[in-house]
Image 1 (cartoon, rainbow, N blue to C red):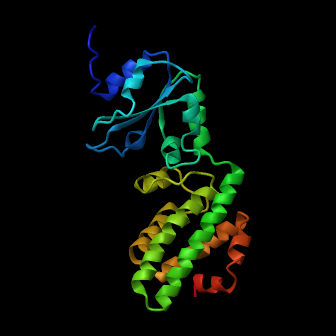
Image 2 (image 1 turned 180 degrees about the vertical axis):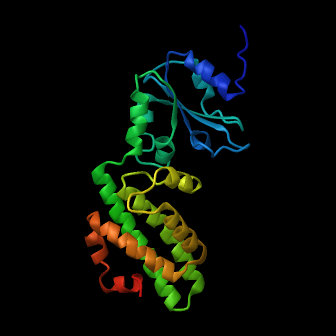
Length: 246
């Protein structure tokens, strides 16, 4: 019996997988799927989508991970469920189709991951908006009370919930921090100037500046109310005065 040659490169594996009828799709994610984001350290993160119940020798590559190639082998049903919900959703939403034997079916699955269900997005936006208001309130209150470190930490915490809110309002999964500028530059959020938003996020996460936090909250409040989330904000009652610009 001839020994199987080890796969040492992305191109070699793609050639091997494309010749296997059990493979329905190949999907490349990560920095290699984001134009201009690759570095000398970037590997190839590849999803290998197999027909449900298929038998293939490619399963020997399960868990394969090297500096060049990181493989995830999964069935079609598992691929549909990946990131729904979950941390992988953004990565798959911006992934590139390398092979699609389903006449566009693999691409359609990725498109579904890139667009949140309307009800789910509304619910998520409301919950994240409330979390954002909570961290902002704590930051402003701590600053008022002379707790500088606590105020900065709460300000930094608020940024995460802020971004979750804004992307949910647009029915999109929030990008990883690494790809935030990449995402907003190419796919701006409606009602937001990208440079202004990024400058505010940078300032607040770095300094916790209260004036910047209040100014940003005023913009968020207007957008959130237009989207139907006034009830979430009104639940804060008189505390809203502490969050709004003076």
